[in-house]
Length: 164
Ligand SMILES: [Zn+2]
Ligand SMILES: [Zn+2]
Image 1: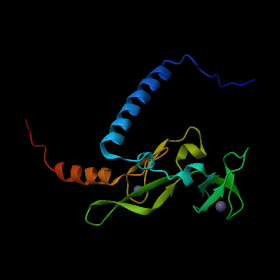
Image 2: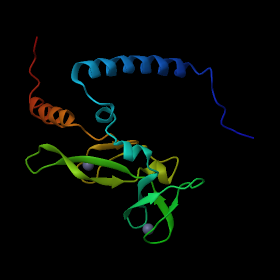
Image 3: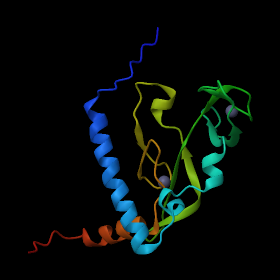
Image 4: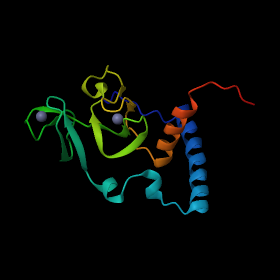
């Protein structure tokens, strides 16, 4: 009955494995060099990873609320606030752009429901209503170096100086 065949001989899988090995090597290198913990790399606390609690957003009201997942639940989830079956897993944007045009990381993210959550044919990315950056599935939280790079790039982009 299952329509979704598991493709064991998918060539992507071998490629994925190669990537993983490469990533593993890179991480080991980082660990050796800087003593960086895995938690910093994954940017998720152990409590967060183990918890079944996630933030949900109601498509009707825009309200965001924490929800403990139970086995067998699927989208759309029941909204704890208005009671409609209209809540989805939102993406988080931690980027913020100040009046001076400089990017910063904000503590409380902006939550958005990507269009494809509502409709499979919908877009899988959208611009953040707050800061204008593109938000994708599993939208990554920026590290300070990402923010620095974004600020640096904005400054360096002002003129296309040919360089050698
Ligand atoms: Zn609601
Ligand atoms: Zn944003």
